[in-house]
Image (cartoon, rainbow, N blue to C red; front, side, top):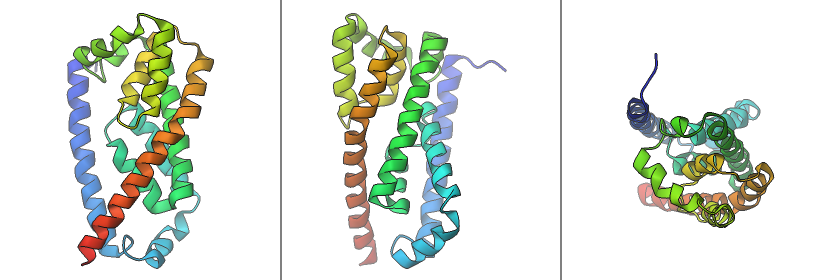
Length: 201
């Protein structure tokens, strides 16, 4: 079955809503287990998942970068909550970087038609204007990857349409991604603890 770009984007939107509902239900379930309020209960829950847990989580991060059906902030927070600040950061970093490389090569191989299955033509054209000068786009891309609020996944796809060298793309992702992930992880971690304290009261 061949889906039109519009139908693909609609399907992704539906899957995003569905995944958000599943995440909420899982959070309620985990909260009832007490793993958000008790470190001992969390350790017990994760004890039998020390190997498979990180692998599954990294795979989830890769998928959410390539097919954005899970809000990125949610998966970043999950990494920190379940695995701790350091390990959570590492798993987030590895998964997001791999997903970003996959996006780049998918766009380079399949071109503009592939991207239109994920983002609208209006959104694509909005950023394509920055690609007229490759050198300027390289700097623009690096700054955006470094900035926490930039649409990283879309820009990674667009980078694949340009003449950016693979080595340039590699080093921008490897060197700039950690800072964004760290800012999101710390901010979301602090916010979640604050919310849990309010709920606990």
